[in-house]
Length: 392
Image 1 (cartoon, rainbow, N blue to C red):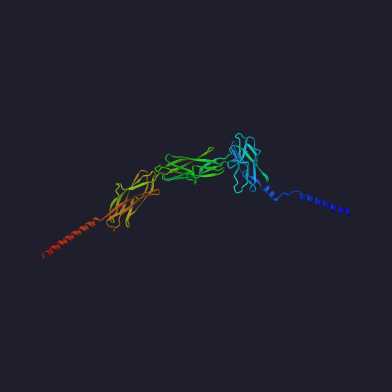
Image 2 (cartoon, rainbow, N blue to C red):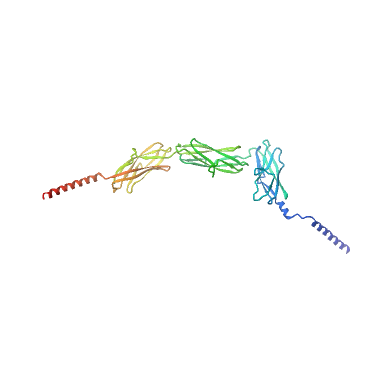
């Protein structure tokens, strides 16, 4: 029995010693452990391909508690290469985490022009009093993988009359990892007005396109009004110190549309009679540089009048040529003597010409003869009356 009790006492003493030792060891605060676990250095692109002589960029993000001071360094940089963390125009060695205004950081790696093709690795490190986070990065050096810059349009050919403004929408794509600033240039036919600008900017002539991004460009091309029908090439360029791209556009000018309608002798008046048709000759001259096709003829006469044309329409009138036609004007039967205006019109979808013709309605010769006869009869009647009653 005594031995059993001694064993119990021994176990009690051992447990007591272990407990006291555990209490004597300082405990690690739970909050500190959470903070150490929460710090992290990351990038969305852990491995990239790059050409010899180019610069690779890795955007960096630091997740750590507000106010943490973090030191930044790069390890295992290949011999002859250079690597640094940049932000705000500086080479950055340390940052203080500010969730409301955290600076944009990126690791830039300059690859030598004589670097051999292959896979290379380096490590970005973030150190602070609460812990350390490392990020392994891979760079594959190879030819023709650095990306390209492209300029183009979904609709490179536009068509219309010479008095129109032709607007092209272009897209400038920067498929390289670097931001590039471009100046804009244009070439076109002599006398044309070509305005090239970033979309939404009235006066800007340069634009910066982020690496992997794109920007819209607007081009307004206006030809001289007398430009003949035909196809005209335009070349739009985006120029930077390291790269120049261009795209070709085409404007198909259908010509200018204008016409003149008048009489052969330029007289704009005519004599007509009530209820009778009168032919008025007209001349339609194409004063534009494009043909007038399917010319429609119409008129606006006084109420009750009728106007017809011969021919009723014109199939085509070539530039510089004249077409002969006739307007057949018939006043209403009860039209009184006087001056009236008849508007004659020739039109195509692109242009129209009109002339206002002053028409003078005169009484018929028959009515004049009838009136003269009545006067004669009246005089004869008066003579008879004077002769019969004058004797008395």
